[in-house]
Image 1 (spheres, rainbow, N blue to C red):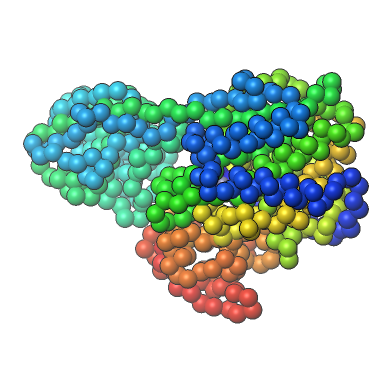
Image 2 (image 1 turned 30 degrees about the vertical axis):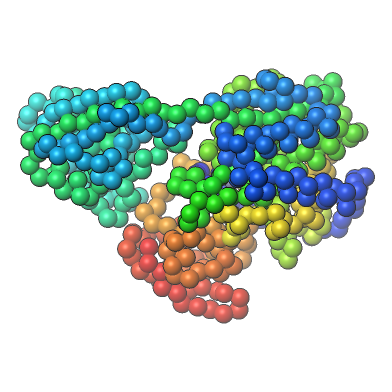
Length: 565
Ligand SMILES: [Zn+2]
């Protein structure tokens, strides 16, 4: 599961109380042993956290290819089972990269750093500095940072603030003018040769040198100056010289694709990503703060990969032959759904014949006492709701969400109008930390999830091609951008009153305040928190530096805890 577009699409709650009726001819003990063998290897130290494009990914790739071959899947990559995809990450700086102000050289990485809006290659700028305030020109709100600058602006270096005259909150009246891209477009239109961002607003985060995000570069260098240099730049500047020489580094990721050809018209796609965060670190999505360490990713997503392999084995001999089956082990998921995105743009089977996509991401940590299973994307075909209602197994509580867009590979398929369904046993304290290890996997739970998937897929065998429906987007674009974070992973499957914490991010406000996984937040100052929506509303009321009193239910105890954002 990738953290970047972690979204909050909680809709219906379905409680299903059930009786198991083992309709499959599976040898449970054997099956669980197989799952364990896969996860033990994939989540072992040897695979170094399976970061896309790295050695560990290569070892995982060999293992999965070996399994697909043994099962007898037809290779459906571009090179046997493998489909390579390119991606860029990180940059190399040429020796010439430097900045001097009033004749003094400032250090890259300490005083300043290039932002990903900077184009590749060498840019050499030498010129006058113009203080462009917030860099905002508004037709309607009577604000124009450029109005008083009478000098010729062409070819000059523009200095501007990251924030806006009334901050960066969701209620700022400059909201539509204060994003970086808009400011850059305005500056470029006025002839800027380079832009230097500074940040005097303590409630706003500094801009990041994140060359992982897919930001389209502009045609001028764009840098961020940290506080000490910002002070110099706001003073009298007689001379400013900037040379940037950057090269974005390209890498290769590997999807692994195998096929069961039943001679049918349509194909059911099973997908699970096998990559993870490697050794973690800044910008990787890791929630662990400490020296680099192997992020084992046993649940995320060796668990889904193991289920994928075992489903391939099952469908090889299954009597449900009205569909073909495609098994995709995607890579690059943690870096932003890169592998699945590439696959749907370069499919090795026609997309038009893909019936629906079943995604498994983090299916190994079913909590034995609660048995909450999330089934997401059920708005993407009318068939899902009734099907989810009728599938009854092992006392699991099933909670569904509608949206076809979320933080895992199914999103790529949904955006190509293919019905999707996504299985997920919930986040936990070890999510995106080195401690997501094999010994914490609930194999009985994972097998139950697999059986639910099999029951659903088998029941659709005679139903032909599913109808695709667009889902309401209650997430992504609509999610307000918060100025503050507590640093917790909410338990999205929790259906009691309040917001239950499933994980606490090291070093963040909640961690410092002593919050723990399992705590249920019911109140923030005077504001009652009854669910995720009210939790988000409560967050939206605060800014960095605020101290709040939280009411927490810990076990049977009610606690008041002070937290500073
Ligand atoms: Zn993940």
